[in-house]
Length: 330
Length: 267
Ligand SMILES: Cc1cc2nc3c(=O)[nH]c(=O)nc-3n(C[C@H](O)[C@H](O)[C@H](O)COP(=O)(O)OP(=O)(O)OC[C@H]3O[C@@H](n4cnc5c(N)ncnc54)[C@H](O)[C@@H]3O)c2cc1C
Image (cartoon, rainbow over all chains, first blue to last red; front, side, top):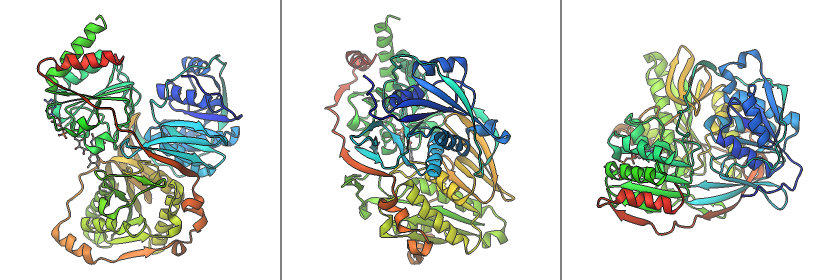
């Protein structure tokens, strides 16, 4: 894919939270940002040297690092009211035209709060962002469990958008730049809750995160509690592991895919022992290729998949994993 | 304790949800109360039920919707769960509202309720299953000048302080704030109750209070299509997926799956 050249001289601010690692969702946002204008980032903490090198490679000219009031420098800096205030202050400072943020719940709230205080148009969960002939920002969205595509045009000067993972393939800039870091003062005047405790989630070492993975293998009630075959296939494919809500409610896994869980749109989704309830489909139906393994030939998930295996997942998944490992020469 | 629960009537997730002229088709026969609002109603009712008798008797849970007349179906369901009052804000000018227009109307209605006495808590669900934006609770809190404690999976109210546990994408957090506040609850927060016969009967005769924008001092031009900052320019159904390839596992299903992935360069 070649990144489209912007037709206007825009400044695009990308939310980078945390700033101690660059997730693939951030790399996607930088890639989209370059197609719209000059790319800058907003951070709530100092980016590390490694992070700055990656930002440079993706064409990020400047990182605006928020200097927060003392009561917000700790765990409270990740609160949406704080991040939203930082985004709004950064827009005022840079006169930015577009703000892009990832599609996490916190980033959605922060983006909405910034858009509110700046009078900007807001699009949540864009699956693609482009400019139209008049230079307005246009976002595509997948709605109604992936059954419809809509396009929305932002009619205000400033456009604020959160973008789903796997919207584009991240691509470094043609030429790297030297990224500068500039501090700027942020005031937080909206009432904020107190953060009594915060335990960061360990990002599972070897496996990619569910939100960002290109391949996801998910297990449901049909695993009957044994996620061994699911993780075995996931590891053979270098995939993330996911689940249905029922499997999570049973305590078999910790993250579920769906309308109220994580929304994903990977290149490949494999669902095993998952019936394909509408709530689940709403979170994965936009996947490029869908494979389902289910012992019930009438399972609704078969209606929306590209490849179906009618069989027992405990047999099918390990066999598939072995074949894939053999193919890879392991 | 006075609690307001904003609720929404949405097209049923199992129905044929569709657009016409870039607008969502509202078919009253194929809609329901947004399921995630049931978690909000449940949370609100439990907070009141946990109060000492005297405070409980003086408490009120109000379900609030911004919708055309079909919004009554959402309020009726809320009555069946046990809320005391139902308010519907209806105005032709509200059609086509974006997140900010909807929030402005909700906030104005909360302020009007506040004129009768303090509204201690606004409790919402985590999202509406049609739009799935999940930003209205935070916007409503900003509009009302109250702290937002969103996506709670555990909720406690004690001596005027709200404490929640929540899962964000990055962390598990415990947040607290003094009331008044805005709370949104995740679908993991509770299991909504089934309406009992007595409440179902009582819900039939409960009066719904209907307010217009004029009652709320909201300018028509600031909401609806007129005030919206985004416009939907197209809505198209996605093409159906190509024919599904089905393999019946007779001992080689896993190998067939792997070969499909290899053939399609997914490995
Ligand atoms: C408000 C609300 C929100 C919700 N949000 C979500 C959400 O975000 N995500 C979500 O996933 N769910 C959600 N749900 C729940 C959803 O409606 C379904 O109940 C759930 O997705 C079902 O999970 P499942 O497919 O694992 O289980 P089931 O529906 O029980 O399906 C299990 C499947 O496994 C198959 N099976 C059994 N044994 C085997 C075997 N040995 N090998 C192969 N196949 C086998 C069965 O044939 C069956 O099809 C929500 C529900 C509500 C009310």
